[in-house]
Length: 420
Figure 1 (spheres, rainbow, N blue to C red):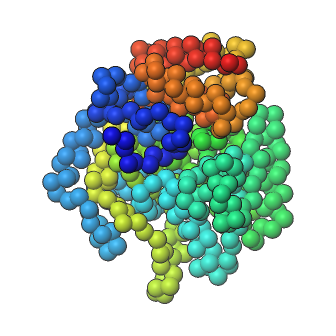
Figure 2 (figure 1 turned 45 degrees about the vertical axis):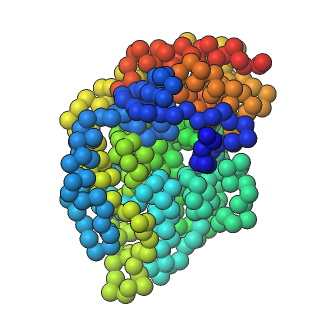
Figure 3 (figure 1 turned 135 degrees about the vertical axis):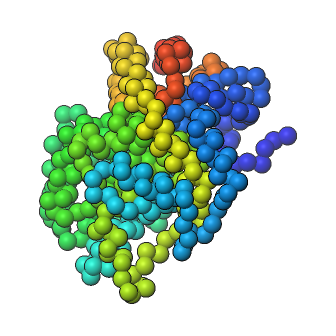
């Protein structure tokens, strides 16, 4: 029987039947047809330590017998307090408050609303936002507005608020980006509320990467002109680029930090926006109209918080960074072997994220080769979901040499499809 489910980012007129997953463990998805598929993209970048990590499983099992959900306006609970305390201990300096939500997109929405609302409450309204070309911050209207204008949001263009975009800092043109940003904020410094960036890696934009020194300069320029810095670490956070947070590599502490995906180890949906005192204080007032009016029904969900607290314990008590370093080292060697192949236009790496950009006549997200590659990989029991002509690998940290060898082996085989 055909399923009634409408799946995300799926063109059902062209797609094959969905694969029924019965269970998952470590780096593998076990399917109803008997296949074991290597999860080479961490199930859309959310699984960190591996599927079914026992520490997180146990935490959720224990919590479900105590409290599953309670309204978070006027109430709190142990798991939420634990997550907030542990997060802030490991977060960049100056972040003092945690606002929970339910997705990465909402974490970004919250940050934008905090920035604009804080200026309003201070009696100095500012509404303009700066973002980066090729950015992607989610699929809600605010998050779409600060994302690159393209195929993802084209039908809704007239409904998106105006954003000032700076060019992506491609290698050799980094100064152009910095000059563009400085000219922009200098021209109208009293109208920009904040600038939002994905640090070091632009995910859905094609796993585009830029060096930490550029992020450091971007933050310096924004601070010089009084523009708040929002960093979207929904994808890059929790070790993906080699450090717990990508911004650490640039020595940048943002004014607002957006987290999701790996915050619970990939077990349950959760978003979090970390803020400095400056924002909290802007909403602290005897005037109820200055309240931060934002919530989702599952804000501070106790089960998600229990998973997140256990995830942070795993980070503190297991050799996670050593596992990340091993994956990063394997990536480097594999990419070196692929670089220079005629089918390969470029290779990129940031920590556990690697990307292979293929030579095609129609590059971009809608490149015709993308679906053919995805189908080829699944035929070989590897889950890779190319971003058009960009094949990326973003495995869970439990992936070892056997899984990585299998992943890169099928990528190597797939190069025969390029140009056909």
